[in-house]
Image: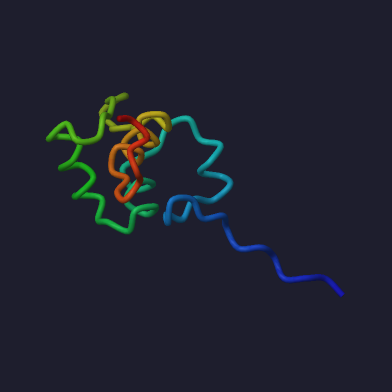
Length: 83
C-alpha cells in the first residue's frame, strides 16, 4: 500500500510549493497566490515601494530574496532579543 502524497510545505503560514521554492523570480500572480491576495494588490504594493520589484521586458518580477525580506519585515509577535 502506498501512502497519500504529502501536502505542500507551509512556511510562515503561507502556502509555498516545492516548485516555487526553487524559483529565483516570482511573478505578481505567484506572490498573490502564496499570500491569498489579488494580483492587483501586489502590483499596488510594488508601485508604493512596499515590495521591491524589477521590470523585465515589460513584466514585473520579484526576487525571491526580496519577497523573503518582505515577509520577515511583516512578522509580528516575536520578542526583541535586544536590550
